[in-house]
Amino acid sequence: MGKSVYLANPYGFSLQQHGPLKELVAKLQSLGLEVFEPFERNNQLDKGSKGWAYPVGQADIADIQNTDGIVAVVNGCPPEEGVVFELGYATALKKTVFLFRDDARTCTPCENYPLNLMLFTALPEVGWERFWYTSLEELADPNKALVQWASQDKG
Image (cartoon, rainbow, N blue to C red; front, side, top):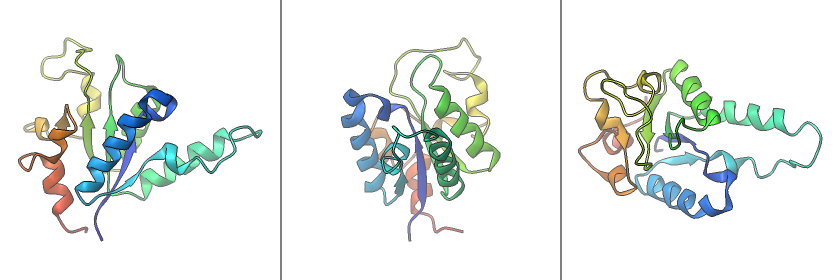
């Protein structure tokens, strides 16, 4: 069985972003990855009922724990706070981390990174760029980390 990734993303909050979300999921699946996409996985919860938020958060935490890695969509300045939390939690669990940003804005005048340096702490100091993606097409680049990681055996 292939590896699995949690797709931390803000796309599910906007109907206009459902198309790009489906494209991103399809691209990751084309690499042989099982994708845990939280908006799709939590649609079975009735958000109109009292107390819906806690089970949603707990389901997302469980999904992060049960995947091999995380692909975090870090668009925005700053990136969406739920994505940042999920990225931090995955980092604490020592999951393999990949960052995706097709937003052309630079959010910080940091020495090396286009975003707050803390978002890069799970990546290698040297060669972090191999875990950084700026387009759907780049996700399939065999010279970058995601394709190489996805093709490795679990364990």
